[in-house]
Amino acid sequence: MSQQTPAGALRAPVEAERLAAYPSLRARSVFVTGGGSGIGAGIVAAFAEQGARVGFVDIDAKSSEALCAHLQAAGLPRPWWERCDVRDIAALQGAIARAAAQLGDFAVLVNNVASDDRHALEEVTPAYYDERIAINQRPALFAIQSVVPGMRRLGFGSVINLGSTGWQAKGSGYPCYAVAKSSVDGLTRGLARELGRERIRINTVSPGWVMTERQMRLWLDANGEQEIQRMQCLPDKMLPQDIARMVLFLASDDALMCTAQEFKVDAGWT
Image (cartoon, rainbow, N blue to C red; front, top):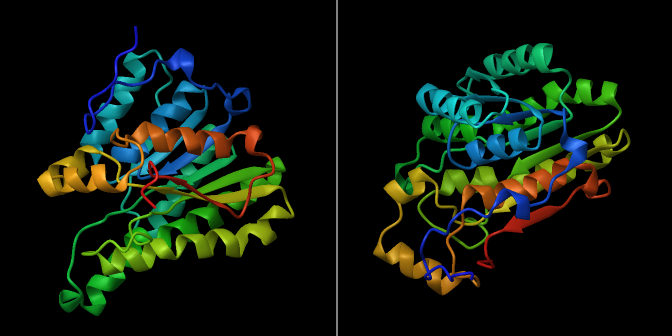
């Protein structure tokens, strides 16, 4: 007999046999930025479970190694990964090239890396603004630049940019993050026609408030719990795997005619 999860509780994972498998992702090479923890780790794990060849970068070596060890222990191939500060574009593009040399041309790119550090408008300096953009906006374009030649060789590809519903819901406390994330749809739509001629699809996935370890440690308090119950249409808290399932679909051949779109996964918040 199924049991209901109390409103607001972190629900148990859905059994793998109840979830979709995508044969088109098997042995396909995938690259994820910021894949060592949080939503990124959920995405890396989901692709590994589909039998994809996964590479990722992250600045957090401890979390990245723990993720790889966990996947190996589960009998899955160990992902390729490298420590990288994505503010250094040369380092990011070098890592993508090294990963492709081992895994093959990437059919899928997931631009996930981000940092939603809080800041007040009055405290923002030009240097701080540039640093926030260097994490939250700039890497996506240059990662796309790096993988597109390989996608052209393959004759197809899927780019998935991670956006955010926070700015759309008029969230406060992170104006630089809002600027960066609001630009994601512009990047998606601005490249869709150019890339689409070569059967390279590009879409945005915009998460709601996902209960990563970081979010629960830094931002989730009693007021946050009340806000979730007030704003979400669905009662359960959002988890990284909820975002990963949409990413899998858009990466797969099942989404062959989906491009230039934004897909929201936010339990109805917006």
